[in-house]
Image 1 (cartoon, rainbow, N blue to C red):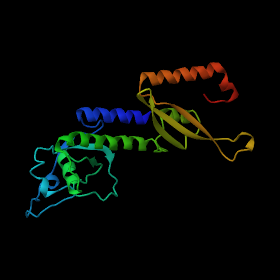
Image 2: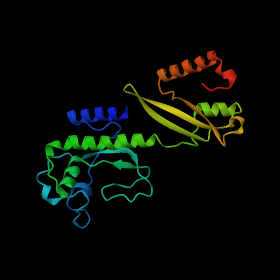
Image 3: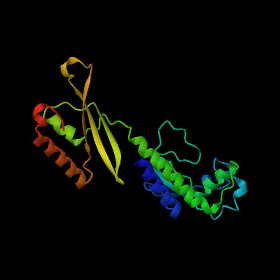
Image 4: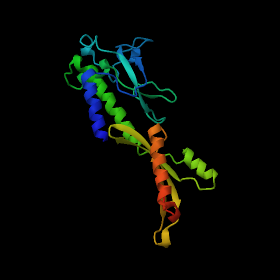
Length: 228
């Protein structure tokens, strides 16, 4: 499942040190990120990632930074090494920044390991963000099917979730529409109807939906009021 996918990602990163999937390109460090001084007066800028004692040893470390897919909240008090722009996402630290931060905290990182360490760090964050989004509701982002049913006279769903499921190593997105329903016999205080199906992201997903839909029609369940 998801943990196995994460393990495979880490194994690949540990092997080749490649950048994390989903990163939105890279950017060089600004003077305030890596330099010991700031322009305009030359005031000393220790910064969160600076550590003067490693300047010589880390000179060969990479200074490019990858952009994450994780958006900044407008209410976030961003640290000095993060730029604040409208619609901006967080920027991951460079090899040098990561190395210097570890050294400041008393660790003795090997510069030769930094490419893999940064890649794994970025992969962990991207994977965690992807799992977090599975629990995000989208109550006003109606699916095409929900809009079609509403056009035909049915009520709109009161909520929608998108889940990503690992099916034998392939990630498949499912759409879940939540509808209010009428309790059977009045015994239950509330009732809900869930319309769950794979999103139309691939031909195989469309085929799965057709097979299930036709199977439901041929079974006669629709005549008894049972959903597919």
